[in-house]
Amino acid sequence: MSFSDDEIERYARHLVLAEIGGPGQQRLKAARVAIVGLGGVGAPAALYLAAAGVGALRLIDHDVIGLSNLQRQIIFAETDVGDPKAEAGAARLGALNSHVDVETAPERLTANNAAWLLDGCDLVLDGTDDFETRFATNAACVAAGIPLVSGALGRWSGQVGVFAGRPCYRCLVPEAPPDAETCARVGVVGALAGVVGSMTALEAIKLITGAGEALTGRLLLYDGLAGTARTVGVAADPACPVCG
Image (tube, rainbow, N blue to C red; front, side, top):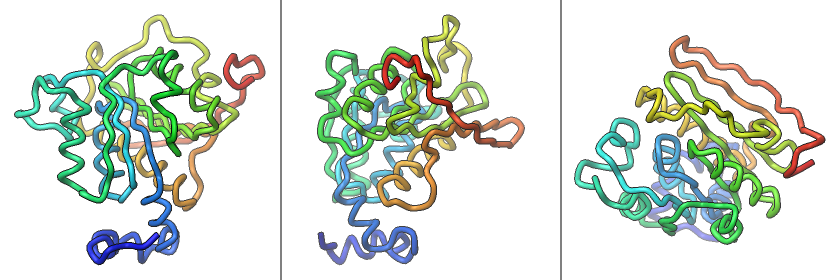
């Protein structure tokens, strides 16, 4: 797989990195990544993955843009309010990098359509705040053998994990919490979305290129108020209904 002169200049800072270089950039160009949820996590992640030269991005989101989204979903502008997130996001990413093939799926991912929506993807990034969607995404990834990068945030804290086989996301969260907090209900500082979204994009790039050590089987917990982060292991659940 060759690069045009424009691509060589565009990705110059990747090409000189020993951990990425030409082979790693070729792997990025050949990759197809699905982004489930173009919200606080998915929006910045999509921008960085497009900028990094991921060959194909599949945007899966059924929602439309609201004015309150603009506080943290930096892929959108005021003129996009009322438009479908997948379509508006595709237009923004196409303007950022014309070398990226952006696919849109303006529908809600469910247990019934997850396998079809994620078909052909090399990696899935989930940034939704709905546990039903998270569970369906995880189950489809486990069944298809697709690595899953998961990001979540709320208030001032966030978390990022990578799941590939066992343990899976369902080992971490066996059931949806009855009092699950959402950004709409408890609030979230906008810049935190950039931190967590960028972390998920970084983990995706590491997985695709083989650089460094991914957070596979681990969870990174970030506390924005304290300015601290720690990493904990995720144990495989023998009774997990998905991977057990």
